[in-house]
Image (spheres, rainbow, N blue to C red):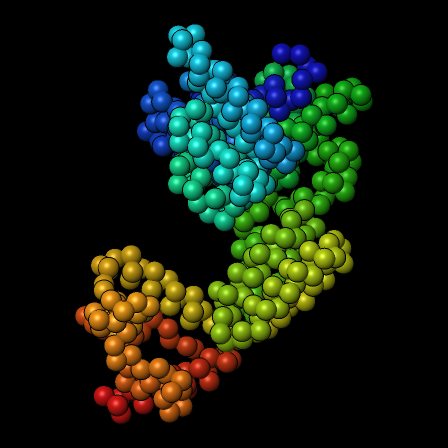
Length: 430
């Protein structure tokens, strides 16, 4: 392959055995390896961070099944591209039925950027088997991909490449003489900078190789690396820590009510190139998980901070994120709702499907009223204090589990008092 071809393309794997990382999917006996060996392609969505092999896996699948490979970029494409892909697949299918054609795989990069109608355009053709659909996304498919399309595709989750994986890629680049020798500490710094992203690693290696060639350097040292990349490298130098370790430190600092530490980790992440929108989403999560009803204003403040950033962008909008981090850190903490929600999910998952009591059912028709739907239901607003003391809202054969247990902090102190009073009224009625 010509040396003018980008390094990332020269090192792109041509067989499953050449793939670095993702062994939880591609290793012997693993889900995606079994799919490759089945002899029959199936529609899937590859979900993972940038530079983890989504496009490579899609291409390898096309090679494995000798399929026509059509790529659509959801960033630049639209319905016209989908229509053209359908026409190409129809031609290939016609040839296949005639004995000389090929299957078709339609690969949609950044599929989450397609709107609902664009995603819907794939459905009839996936259903009919005209082509196999493979979508690639960096966003959670549960929120970004239509449920109809999601139900017709298997989701495979790709992980950021490990330090060992990235070092292996550096060695591969050296093996084809694409880069000169690299000082061990410089390799460590490059791996930390890449942050699990093989493409970022290879693009950086290529930049260094070109610069080393100009200066006729036989080795890339750590000092020279920092000189060449300068501020760009400093901004991404996490001292070997992984991205998710840093967000974990931020989350735990907020949970631990240390505003200074929380600000430090926030700035570390922003300085390291983390997407402020991602940071805003995590702050919203913290407000829900660790503060909850101890201070309901925290969630509203987190949502406001996210909106302010969307309006102002960087750097002005980052101040709203900092304000939010400080507020979340000093706010009273409660994970009572978080624990109650998880307990309820666990209970429902293990429990059977219990019938809704007749008095709680809606009765929009005369037939339903005849069957006693809604009979004897007590309308709380018509009761003293707006509370129907003694009324039951659980299935008839179920005892109230008591999922929600407010803590003695913040607003939940008053919530606990209210719940105790309601319990007293219920006991009196019963």
